[in-house]
Structure formats: structure tokens, C-alpha cells
Image 1 (tube, rainbow, N blue to C red):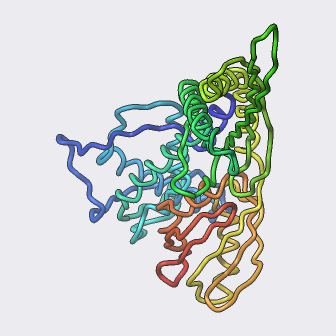
Image 2: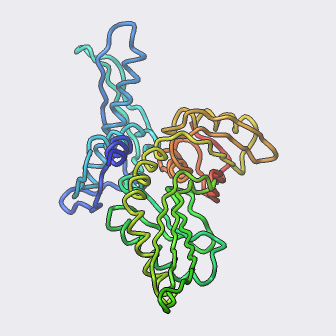
Image 3: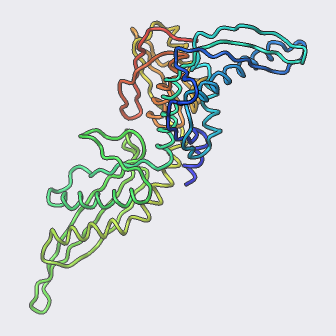
Length: 370
């Protein structure tokens, strides 16, 4: 599907098996690396050259740590893009950076030699998160539920129909999730099934004929808002004296009848939803003051991918409320805020809840980085 390939390019596609190299010296998070970054420069542009040399040194530090501690055993796709994603946030994995030497050289380059500790644990955790995000996007994510208010006699047949639909979705590459308890999924697409049956009798040449009309409707909804994005339905008329047996058979035939249309609509809507911009209400607890809240808004805008705009809506006590225009689901945003490079560089936070398009986090230590 196009959504899989497009998102794989954005978020990358790397499946890593982490091993400790037995032959090479092991680099722990407490050990330091020393590297030299370089950039060509012209007179009068030393500041730009220095910045580029610093970036080069940071990237080399990450490369050295990866080469010593982490071995890529299985590359699924787009390794270079994934590597670039990690490199683009290199500062978030380095601490205690110390510049040992810097300045122009006779070769027309500007060099910066620095010593820094590499947070291997954070680096590996973020690799796992990249893989998790890729897994979300590679296969459409769907949950199937039953519509409330159905007559008790049709519920067993509706459950069988939902299981049949789940098997077909899974076989076709969809990730299917079962809602836990009364909780409604907040990411992906929700297929809500409703089933009805009506029966009639007629006499023909001294025989009583029973005809049952079974109708199944599948509504594709946006989780969290309940907005119906598309529907698909089918009706089957079947004779029989055993109403429940006919109901089971009719529900199964209806699933078969709606499958192709439902699959097509799910695939189309998945791509639209994946890249559509939505409003997310972000609530942050334990914010020090209004100035820190404003700083957080600026950080979210500049350093979180797919954020189009952030507005600070209110600040009261230690709670800030933001309106975020974001291309993705709230779970995507939550995952990005949990990335180690973000938490190390800006503010450490824990996820409290995701309810519909409302995301609530708490700053663990009442400070913001820089």
C-alpha cells in the first residue's frame, strides 16, 4: 500500500537485533568517546563552519557508539533513512560534552574535537520506538466492535460475524485489535457492526413458508470522535424454520458480501487518516510557570515532526493546555514526546492518558532543557 511505503520513508524502517560485540571493546553509557568534526569554510563564515563541524562531531560520536555497541542484524528497509532520523537528533543522546580543541586548519577546514558520553540505552530505546511506529504504519490498524442496542437474539450471530471479519482482515494484512473492556480505541479506524433480522410467513398450496431477511451494516468510524467516515451494508433473504440458524448463515453471507467494499474503504481511509491534520488537545501537568509553558509550545513546534502549529490556550496553577495541529494520531504524538532524544534535550515526561484527541502528560522534573 502507498501509506506503508510513504510512512516508511518518513519514520524509517529498521528492525534491529541488539547484541554486545564479544570481539570489540564494549562501550557503556558511562564511557566517553572522543571525535573530531570537520567542515570547509571561507573567511568571514567561521561561525557557520563551526556549527557544521560540531554537528559532524556529534554524528561521529553516535556512529562510534553504534559501531561498538550495536550491530544491525536484520535490515528491513530504508536503513539509511532510519540512520538519518537518529543522526538528526544526535545531541539528544550526548551528555557532558567537552570541546577539547577547535579552530581553522591550514587545509581550509574548521575542526572541532569534542569528548562526550553517549547514552546507549536511550539510543537503543529510540530505535525500538522507530520500529514500533513503523509497525503501526506498515499495516492499517483496525478494531471491530458491535453496535450497542442490538436485540439479544442477534448478538451471538453478530459476534460470529465480527470474528469472521477479523479473520479476513488479519489475513489481508490489517492489524486488528480488540478493545479492552469498555475502552474505545483512540488510534486507527473502528468498524462497528450492527445486525438485524425480520421474518415473515406465507402460505402456499397448504404449506407455511418462513422467510428471514438478515441485514448487516458496517460503519467505519474515527475513534475518539465517533464520526462516521463510511458505511457498507448487505441484505440476505433466506428461507428456513430455524430462525437462529438462518441468522448465523445470513450474517456470514453478509460479511462476505460487504468484504471487498469494506476493505477498499478501510485502505482509502487509512491513508487519509494517517496524513490528515487533526487538532489534539495536549494537557501538561507540573509546569513551573507561564514562561516554561510558552517555551514548551515553541519546542513542540520546532522539534516534533508533523506538528504544524501549537497554541497555548490556558495556564492555571501548574497545568498548561495546548491546542496542537498535528498530522497523525495522539498516540504518534505521545510516542514522539517519549523519545529519549526529546526527553534528554528538553523535558522528561510521563504519559498519563490518551482519551480521544486529548493527550495528557506530566513533566517529571520541573525544568526544561535547552
